[in-house]
Each structure stands twice: as C-alpha cells, then as structure tokens.
Amino acid sequence: MKIETLRASNLRCFEELQFAPGSRINWLVGPNGAGKTTILEAAHILSRGRSFRPGGRVSPMRRGTHEYWIYAETAHDDGRRRRLGLSRTEEQWAARLDGAALPSLGPLFAACPVVFFGPESQGLVAGPAEERRSFLDWSVFHVEHESLDAWRSWRRALRQRNALLRGHGPGVEFEVWEHDLARLAGEIHAMRSRCLASLGPYLVEEAGSLVPELGEARIEYRPGWDEHVGLERQLAELRDRDRERGFTQRGAHRADWWMHFPGVARREHLSRGQAKAIALVCVLAQTRWLKDRVGEYPLLCLDDLGSELDSAHGSKVVAWLHAEPLQAWLTSSTDPDPRHLEGESRVFHVEHARMVEV
Ligand SMILES: Nc1ncnc2c1ncn2[C@@H]1O[C@H](COP(=O)(O)OP(=O)(O)O)[C@@H](O)[C@H]1O
Ligand SMILES: [Mg+2]
Image (cartoon, rainbow, N blue to C red; front, side, top):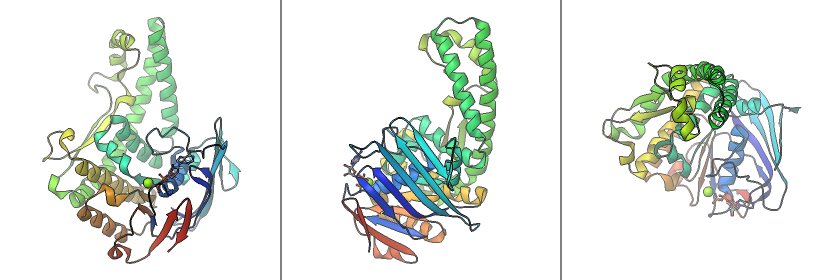
C-alpha cells in the first residue's frame, strides 16, 4: 500500500494538513515541534485507531477543537485505489472506506497497513509484554482478520470472570466463563503460533543483518498459561488467588514472545542502542513478512531514525529501504546525508505545521 494523498484537520498543531508523498522514500525534515511526527501519527491512526505516542489513548485533537479527521487515498499493487477516512469527536468515531460508512473499524485497519518505528519502539524490547503482544496481534490481524472477533469475545468473557472474582458468584458461573475463556484462548494461541512460525525466520534473518554482533536469534513464545495443565483447569485452580488479586492471572492476555540472542543473557542487559536496533529488526521483519504473506508492503514510518541509531546501523537501514520497493516516510531534524538520497527520494521541509517540498 502506498499513500498518495494524506489530509487531516485539527490534528495536534495542524489546522489543515495536506501531504502528497512520493511513492518511495520521503524525508520529512524540520525543527523540533514542527509537526513531523504528527504526520506519521496521522497514518498510524488510520491503521490502528490510536496513536503510538505514550498515553496513546489521549486524543491528538488540536487544542480548543471538538472534532478531527484524517483522510487518505491509497494505491495498491493490484492497481486498486482506495479512499479511507476516519473522524473523531470526544464521544464517537465515524469511518468510511471508498465512500461507504463502516459499522466497525476492522475493514479500515485491514485496508491501511502501516508499520511504525520511533523512540517509543524500544518498548518492544525493554517494555512490558503488552507491547510485544500488540506487535504480534497486529501481525496476526493482517493475515487472519477474524482474530478481531476472537479478541472481542475473549475480552467480554474475561470481563465477566473478573466481575465474578470481585463478587461472590457460585462456582457454576465461573465454570461457564472459564470454559469459554479456555476455548477462545486456544483459538488466539493457535493464530499467534502460526503467525510467529512464519514471521520467525524473517526476524532471525533481519537480526542477522542488522545486529550480527549479537549472534543468531532464537524465538520463544509463551501462551500465557501452562499448556500441560490446560487453561480451563488452571483457571479453576487459581480462583481463590485470582479473587485475592482481583483479576485473572492466566490466559491469552498474559502471553509473551521474545528473541533470544546467545550473547545476551538477559533482556535487561541490552544497551538502549541495542534495544532500539532489535526493535527495528522486528519492524523491518514485519514489513517484509507482510509483503510475502499479504502480497503488499505496508507503509513504513521511521520517526527520528538518526537519533535512534548510530550512523553505521542508520546507513544499513537506509540501504535496506533502497533495496525494498516500498513507500517509506522518515523524519529527521537535520538534512539527510546526501548519500542517502540516491534513487527515488523526496525531501519535504516541515516548519510551524507547514510543508514545502525541497
Ligand atoms: N493537542 C494538541 N493541540 C495543539 N498542538 C499540539 C497538540 N499536541 C501537540 N501539539 C503541538 O504539535 C507540535 C507537533 O509536534 P510533533 O509532531 O511531535 O513535532 P516534531 O515531530 O516535528 O518534533 C508540537 O509543537 C506540539 O506542541
Ligand atoms: Mg518528532
């Protein structure tokens, strides 16, 4: 997917945003606070309904306004063009795809794959399991759209069990929800396992080229409960302890996966630079994997790459971008190295929420 036109209104510093990127590598250059990250954020919101910024659920709506919208025209490898729109007020959202109103956001997200890397992405390595799960589940979603339904049902059943934990429901009520939870967790686990089995080799390969100094990566995945015991039995056994804590301690919401490197005993031993490079490995692997699995590259957004990586790793990434015929949006507070501008690169200056192509 390539975005041909992006427009937005009342998004952070932008009263109006208009961006017509080139089909390959687009550099957004400008001082801090100019609005560069916000442009990437607009694409990200179309792709997932929320921002990547810390506190991603805080509205990016321009101060003093009551509604923002984002609109994009996309071009696809099969020759199709699509029109995507999302608007939000404090209370509600509305989405459109090719002119038709959508009853749910799933089809919008499916039509708009955007992969993002920025300062927050090291959370993928150093942060809580939730960040790695969300990376994995987003990948799952793009190959198995029905995962959204499984997730919705899972969350509903989990809420029910958690409510029972806080009340004093009879055991039989627990049994009903625990049975459902075990079945849904099994479905989610199967999708995640399939996904990681096919994504894994891409992760290992990208790690081999971006961080060869760490040795060959090995992927580990834990479903969130003890598979030998089975989730249904574990939930029944843990009821009293879960009651004390007030929440369900086992299940699909506790899964985690990780890349082990022979040279790294513990994840906490990684330097910040290494953690960032590994997060970038995940993003590049996901990008190539999506191309092979879905038939099309996602839009790749790299925020502030230069300050995230040392120059040797940064140059490798730019070479990678030149070799893969995808659309990329990169931000930088300094002019890009002229050697990085070979091929089809375009440069836009962003200043005070205005964009000018150089
Ligand atoms: N809700 C908001 N309303 C108005 N302005 C905002 C809002 N949120 C952020 N801003 C401003 O938007 C600007 C753009 O930030 P950002 O896109 O992060 O810039 P850059 O990436 O170029 O450093 C900042 O100056 C920030 O103060
Ligand atoms: Mg920024």
